[in-house]
Length: 197
Ligand SMILES: CC(C)(COP(=O)(O)OP(=O)(O)OC[C@H]1O[C@@H](n2cnc3c(N)ncnc32)[C@H](O)[C@@H]1OP(=O)(O)O)[C@@H](O)C(=O)NCCC(=O)NCCS
Image (spheres, helix red, strand yellow):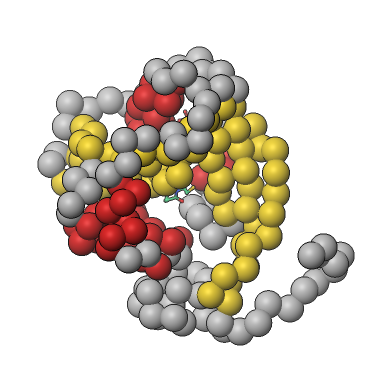
């Protein structure tokens, strides 16, 4: 369905966002990064779905991330244990503070399907450090394309961050979904900067 020009009403109980898709076709030059001995990546333990969801909520609640919360435990476990799916927890001084998920299930491609830090770690150089690891990991496999999408409900700096990382925007979409606070996936107090309607 074509979206008409001008303003379109969004039904109450729904959120609307503008989604930007970005891609790159070769590994970009490395950017300077802050590096801390206490920063590490650990593979997500696919049997620990509750623990994974707790971290997913801590990262995503402010940005109304809900896709993993809509899935059953079995579905989450199935994705996380796929040999073509690489999910990593970012740890700072032993605390779980970020997530990286790389989806290699489509041949010759990699989707950076989740990338985020908890509020505590945003703006401290850890995002750049994690992106350097993403680029190393993704381009160490025989892929032709690395892509990601971000939406206007994500952190306001995310789109620019991806562009600085070497991704080029190529597609824009409008996404309308149930507000996860209305359907009980997130607390009604989540993301107070996005009014509940
Ligand atoms: C998107 C996101 C990962 C970006 O990470 P960030 O923490 O904001 O970014 P950083 O602070 O690591 O990096 C920003 C810049 O500041 C620099 N920087 C910040 N603190 C620094 C420090 N102490 N020392 C050196 N450099 C520093 C980085 O090197 C980087 O420079 P560059 O982009 O020019 O290369 C983060 O905002 C986030 O997790 N947001 C919430 C979840 C989200 O919206 N994810 C995206 C969904 S698709």
